[in-house]
Image 1 (cartoon, rainbow, N blue to C red):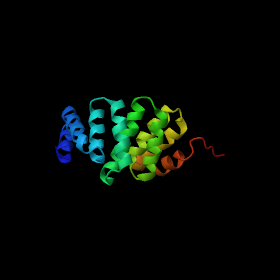
Image 2 (cartoon, rainbow, N blue to C red):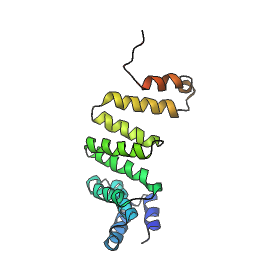
Image 3 (tube, rainbow, N blue to C red):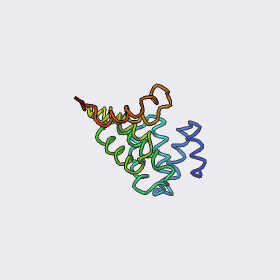
Length: 159
């Protein structure tokens, strides 16, 4: 089965079929980054987080196309977070933030992992900054500059 067909299964929520197809294809193409990524994605869709990790890691090690890379980082980081490995989740999201500084979703996921690590201040700073930068709510927009400014140091006090 071609990668495009497996992708179609994933996009339609047919995770079991996608997993079987990806794993079968990996028997002949074990170093295909997309097949490893699709196997990981299908495992995630089936709540097989532990199994997904090795596929995500291998896909990232081999090298994914730029169009899939950010999503693979999100998938791996979220999977680590889901199984309670918050340090690995934060490490993954930090690496992803360096590679994709404009990807706001990565930053939101990073803030959740930081929260789980009890890095509450940094988690809040990231979350508040994202709200200030991306909200279309008129009441947020009215205070955008202040929100972003305050997000830089939540403990700052001005006399």
